[in-house]
Amino acid sequence: MPTSHRHKVELLRATRWIGSALLILAACKDSQDAAGKGSVAPAPGGAGTGSAHVGAAPANTDAGASPIDAAVAAACVPGGALRAATGSDGKQLRICSHDKKACVEVDPATGVLHNAAYADIAVPALASAKVETREGQLVACFADKCREIGKNARDVINRDPDVHNEHLAATTDLRALVIPKVSAQLWDISGDHEIKLRPPSGEQGIDEMRPVGNHIYAVWMPPAEAMYTRGGKLVASLWSDGTQLAMLDETRSVALTPDHRLLVFADPSQTVELAPSVGYDDWVKETGALAVLADHTVAVVLVRPAEASVILVDPARGTVFRRWPLTRCPG
Image (cartoon, rainbow, N blue to C red; front, side, top):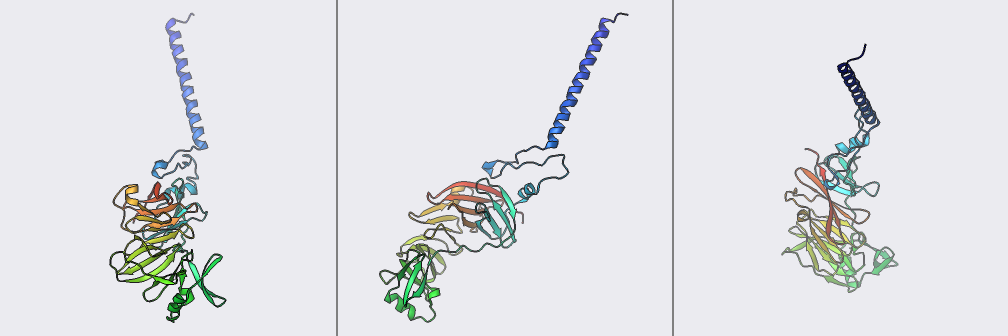
């Protein structure tokens, strides 16, 4: 019996529908197979906002996120007074809170933040020359060079029974000597005479004085911090107290003040006003944290109510060249 035209059309439609369904099922199976093999997706945010692309764990695996991804996702900058230093690998920036007994490390190149085992960060050592007695002579020595201390300076030292060699220090270029008496004195080593310092704003006496590379750091009374050249010229008035200091090398240093200024004591000296350089005006009125990385980049950590920031500064140019906003831990 011949098939009618209408029956042929219906048979053709049914064949096409079955073929389309088979194609859709095949496509779904391919999609599921690809998901099972795992795919990499960027995390929210990009490098410009301080986040890095972190691979997502496969959606249908039983193992869940990897420990590394979990550490990155959960990391946040702890509260309390912060200190910073170069990380264990010499490249990362380590940020620790003694109050919270917590540390994190951040990659300065990418802004990726991850948790790290807690270890207290010591205050950075400040470079200075030692004073010692060699072959009956009182000398200031740094590295493989020494310079004899003159008679006038020795007389001042000998008149005070509480001042011994270990209390004395000189600039690393062996040009200036600090004698820590009741009111500390600065002496020109080659000229063998005292150098009088000018207070930054009418203070009366010196409470503390120490060499910092080729400069002199002094704390006046009432409290006022200042930095001077080895010849006694006032370079910068710092703050009442709380300024952090670190060495760029054996002669140059940097200072971070509680009002968020970064000062580079070199030739020439530089002052970086951090708040205008990175924006915002609600930085917490604390010093933050300061560290010098292996490549001499200066890293500063500042805190706002909702975030922390790592600010990277080129000390030679005195400019901010990168900032990474970071998650701040609650509480």
